Amino acid sequence: MITGFYRVLKAIFGKPLLWLFGIRVIGGENEPKDTSYLLCSNHIGALDPFCIAAAIKHHKLCFMAKKELFKHKLPAAFFRSLGAYPIDRSGANVSAVKGTVRMLQEGHCTAMFPQGTRHSGVHPSGTPIKSGVGLIAARAKVPVLPVMIRNDQWKIGIFRRTEIIIGEPIHPEELLPQGDGEHVNYSEVSRLIFDRICALEEKR
Image 1 (spheres, rainbow, N blue to C red):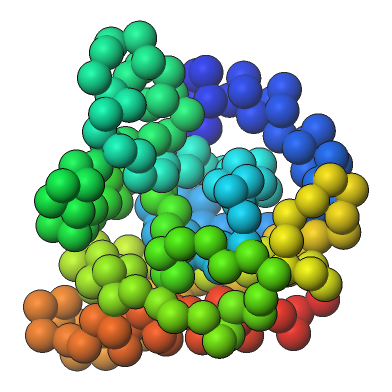
Image 2 (image 1 turned 30 degrees about the vertical axis):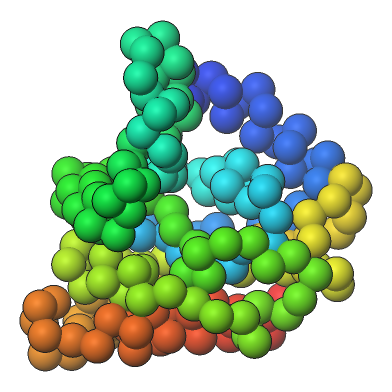
């Protein structure tokens, strides 16, 4: 659900942000309304989290942020209100996995980029992906919502025509056909998720 300060910010900045960056949202009806989910998207620029958050209608999206941003109460409260949650990058993989799985199991919706970092100006299908997304999806056992950010140049820019395509959710039993999140190939799960993201390029 979208509540409080996040709702106010979204109401003020959401539509103007989509307009400024020429974003058309396709497939908004695919977003689950009554359950938490792990949103996974390709990553083409620093503004991707803001554009995706503006495109999502029914839930507040949570993103990882380095724990140093949460040292003081006032900044911490502000970042949490925006949907950020702290991750200890010194223990990066373990902290990120546990923190994100916990958020999902507590009913929050979180967003991740399987590529791990930005790949601006190149087609996403040829970029490397990380196994962490597969691990989190397997452990949390919530639907995965595939999203593609697409335009001709694979870069976010002012008034550049861009589409954010929201695909149908991938349900846990599809990712884990044996129902076991402990004994799976996480790289294969990440690949399945990212292949589903890349397949959204054909949607219009």
